[in-house]
Image (tube, rainbow, N blue to C red; front, side):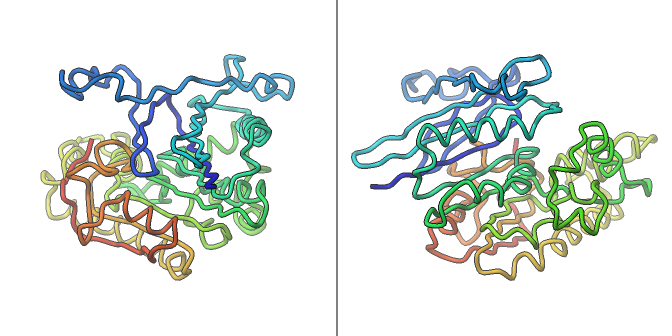
Length: 339
């Protein structure tokens, strides 16, 4: 019997469908096309897996509530197939939290009581802020299970760099400093980092990954579109608007701007150099202008970014199931811009 848990940390409500043992993701916000527009009139709505939301009822007693006072929730699906006990879990979290650690622990307690403690295999993953959370919570997630359980973590677009912006400032560091101070997260950051670095530095994955003992896979675009727009060349650092076209489309960048972007890519590659040495780690860094590649448009679609004809989904699968070592760094992208 296979007893597999997949836990995803995401900042918005999503629905997912199974794809070869892994999942595709789509946001349910107002910008998403209708199902008819997305799948065409020949595609039945019955083909879409809709998973009911489960409230963590006991969370309120532990003070693990969101900003509006509501309890956290998750989506849980127990999988398909004879002799297979595969659970699909999607954690729900508010975009701003002051009780994130309490919510995390409350959700984990609830899931463990429902059978997650008996999993033979478990994967913690997240995209963007959830990708960062997957790194921060990776070893803690590992500690919830017996040593016999295979536990791994996947961070998608969560490798935020402590980069100097185009004005010479550090926009993202300033933002992170405010988050760390406002939410008082210092005590929940890894001790191996805060013992010698300031708390804000310990919010950046480059200062964490070398000391994470649980197998971790980093999936990231070297030209991460969110970081280029919000960290490297944010409007606040570009009052004349010289980066307006470039930060929306790399094909519009000048030679000098491309040189700065190349420096950003090199910073990312240098930051993962030591991490990539371990044979238990995995890595897929391409040169797409994208943010989050475990979504429907990139995960395993027919035009998914691929290296050596291997899609992202196949690469992660090979790493998770120990079929092959995956350390991919590619200077190209099948599509320059991925939505």
